[in-house]
Image 1 (cartoon, rainbow, N blue to C red):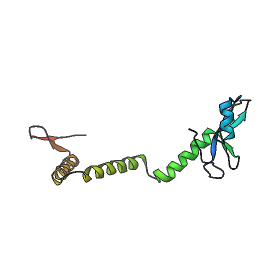
Image 2 (image 1 turned 180 degrees about the horizontal axis):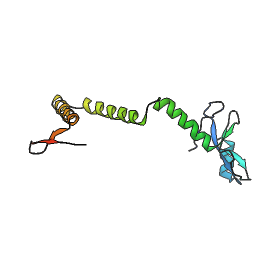
Image 3 (image 1 turned 135 degrees about the horizontal axis):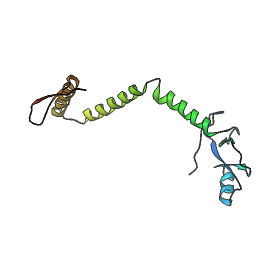
Image 4 (image 1 turned 90 degrees about the vertical axis):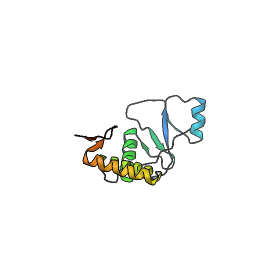
Length: 133
């Protein structure tokens, strides 16, 4: 399966990987179909890794990574700190768990959360315990 990349220049989903070196028949067919781009037989450092089939813009892996990171930051992180994102994930999991619980379990859950917040709980014998963190 051919991976398609978003072009940083025209923003179309028409970026393909550039393959360098002498192409095989299979690679030549893929290039004809626009699934890859052939970069030539000469392999040098710092050559681009991707080419847009719409606008012919070429870019490297570092730029691809940076573009993907910026999109992730914009769409997912939205300015939150790592701690805030983890807390949001915990809240989502807690809400899903609570949605599947009976009223009895919800009451037990609430008591457990309250005990945890106070640093107290009960051991197996029902004796109070103190948790020091």
